[in-house]
Length: 338
Image (cartoon, rainbow, N blue to C red; front, side, top):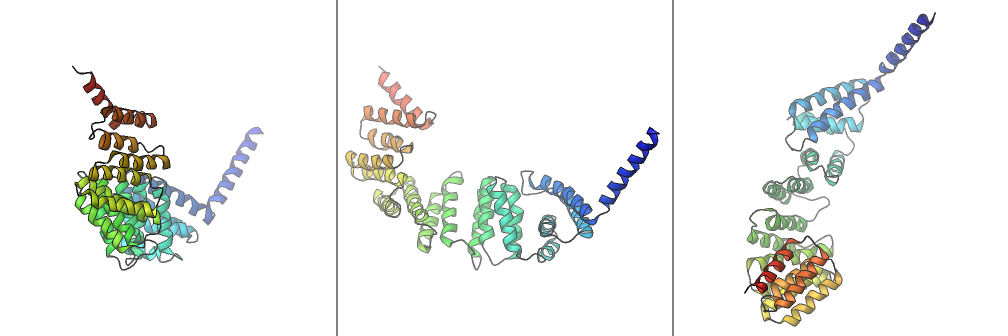
């Protein structure tokens, strides 16, 4: 009797499961999830060159899902991305064209991955947006951002050039694109290409139209910093730091380097101190304030005791700050030598 009940119960359960999985919506969701597992495996692999075999598996799953259920927007969005990544651009565009606002959907998806720390996974979305709207430069700007994060600055520069060549921008300003080129030339390339960085910052300032005064201030500050690194006349970068401060009076770094520039131009220690101290008052955690005070003002002026105290100040702010630790050790070793 018990065995019959167990058998009957098992048959009933199988019947329920069979009825569930015969429902088109459930089958579509099942295939969708299997495809998403494959897509994520390829997209999150850490490379913008995805595993084509895995992606084709996702394509098959999602094509099957569409035969069992309605063409949901997320199905179409991801299926188009998979098509694009396996080289079927026509299939991608045909799929995305069924969406209400494909460009905005692709950009939103790409930004969500980029801000979430998945730069490689964001690339297909921005690349797709560039194909849906080839006359818009915004996707290439974000492609550049992602390529910088994955350690490909040269590719990022090429992407920014494509953004600048586009007939129009949706949300960005050309000044932002030139500014990003300057940052890459100055900070991301090894060695830095300072002349190109300065030209990019000047182009950004010439175009103008910055979205915020703070970003425009940063462009002046970084141009001044680049001119300093190049060894140009201090008068040139004094002007840039002063312009940065006019736009953003709380720009701590601009105050600090303006103080350094005053000393390099005139040798006036007190004037340099006043400006650097103003920068430190704005941001007491700016470790480069005391560092530059010691290395660029006190030491060249022969004020070794003051330089030692400046480096100690920097280490109080950031105990593991290697430049200050090395400078302090060098000075202390030199003073203890016979």
